[in-house]
Image 1 (cartoon, one colour):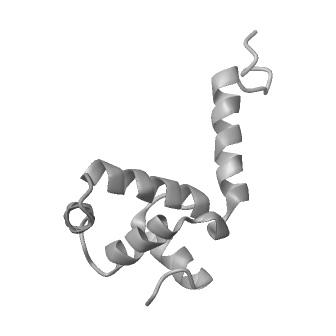
Image 2: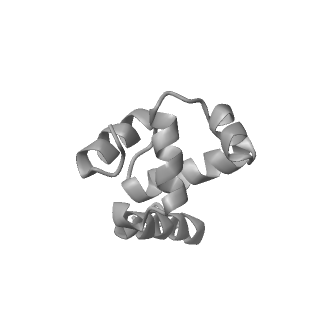
Length: 93
């Protein structure tokens, strides 16, 4: 019988769950100034590619920062991130 069938997670699954928990424990106060800057630009209606051009970085870099911010906020997409960041007063409305 596998360990997952017994109700325990495999090592990679357990590590991934641990990383998600760490991100949640970091919380919104752990957002970097760059993550906040990017969130504000995205929430002002700009696309990731526009933000990348404005900040002279790649779109992939913007998406990386957004992913880190989403993890710290405990959300999965822009709509959830906007709602959470607004509630917490992290972004300028």
